[in-house]
Amino acid sequence: MSLQRFEQINQNIREAFLAKKRANPEQFEKRLKFSWSNWGFGLEDFETSCARLEKAGIRYIELHGNHYGPDLGYDAKKISKIMADHGISVGGVCGMFSADNDLSSNRHIKRQAAIDYIKREAAFTAEVGGKYMLVCPAAVGRPGKYDDSEIDRSIDSLSRVADVFVQNGIRAAVEPIRAAETSIVHTFAEAKDYISRLDHPGVQHINGDVYHMLVGESHIAQALWDAGSMLTNLHMADTNRCALGDGSLDLDTIIMALYLIGYNLDDSCFVTPEPLGPGGDPYPAQNAKTDPAILDKLVFDSVNYFREREEFVLSL
Image (cartoon, rainbow, N blue to C red):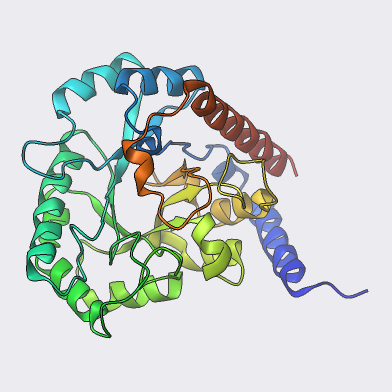
């Protein structure tokens, strides 16, 4: 019986992974950097969140990009001390782009808000030692398009502020998001085209999200392999957007693809769960209070399952 198409791709990735592992075993000694995106913790006290991650053995955090105005957001010095107390470093910052700060908006005041937001957040990312800042080309939670010029406005907006990524020594990571949540840039191919059209040294990387990739890509692991060094962060959740291991995600093949591209060897590359649950607009979670026991289970289930599968894959 012949293999299904996705099974054939899986086999190709597995064979390439095993061949590289045999040829260069030293490149597989360092494990993938496992982080956690904390904005899904909502209004929880930051120290409580850090204590949870420390207990789970997670040493990196993706911070909520909550500097929505000059008087809002984390105080870099205060949270740096909290993180240091718990042995946690910053992977990057999750830029949050809604209709209020939309790079592609048809209202200039909203584009300016996005530009100002990026300036604040990029400086903060550098101050806390983050490696990347996530950028969404259009508002998340607004799937209906304004018009056919959104891409052009988004590129124009981001080009006006792209120098700040170079100045602050961080990567801008463009995130493709499923069509149910945003109006443009839904796939890795579209993200690559966006980056190419922008043509700026500060905007050269991609933030993947396997939940969005389930509908945007024909094969998740192949898309990651093809992205190569452009990939700098990968948001993780299972097929139901819950904890890893709770759905039917082919995590083993994804792990193989990450090791194939040397993702474990780049200190600016992270695997970052962001299990937000199903729905068209996950942003309300940032303003919610969730039972800590639920958050504990999300974190511990995800990290334990991921490390279990990683060790299995590396034992092949």
